[in-house]
Image 1 (cartoon, one colour):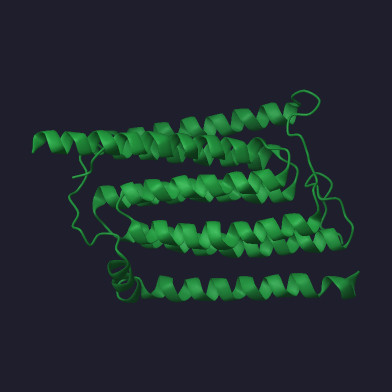
Image 2 (image 1 turned 180 degrees about the horizontal axis):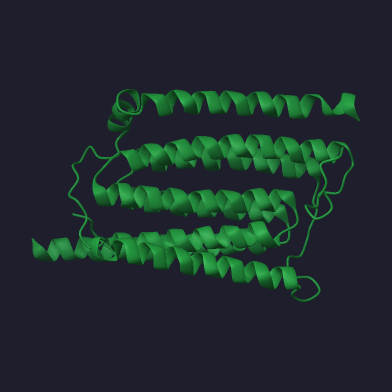
Length: 103
Length: 180
């Protein structure tokens, strides 16, 4: 028996988190804040996965959420590596300026 | 008995409203702070309130892993890099709203509406009644048994993904000096 709010409330909250993170990814120009907003998007997805796992009484959603957390940690590792590399080459930390792949 | 059950229900609702509000407020704060240092600190609040929500969904191990992995490791890594790169503030709405910001807000709003409509259409009638789960649901032992029996391949692939990411981070950090 799930006490308190039903699963729909959790899913609505997850959708709002995802949309907020998407807004941050689209609006912000600092790559660090873009990465932080990506974390919010991934967390929204995780909340939906765990809510549905609890709803169905099945453990696969929680396993999926843990895999998403591992992928998020990998993404942060590589993304912050990029930020440090960009900073070392004295390029501007601005995703509008860094629009070409040429080094 | 019924009185005790409804009192528990009210407490769960209060915890949910507090954690959900903290979650929304800190997510908006992460997106709208101009200083990335404050954004990273707001992300800690977001992760902690999400861990409370996971506890309400009887996902104890995921809540603990969330606090350990995200708030303990990922945010600390962010704070180190922000300290290394130096404070660099960028007011998100400087100089009035540009067409890009307006279009991004419209896109984010339409994503939200699309998710709500899609979930409501596909599963709207089935969301009211949740399954009954046992006490072991979400406990570390139960997760570990699932990981080592049903989801062994996912477990192994996760370790490979983490290894590749670590190697990539080392290469990105080490070779820039030679290239520059």
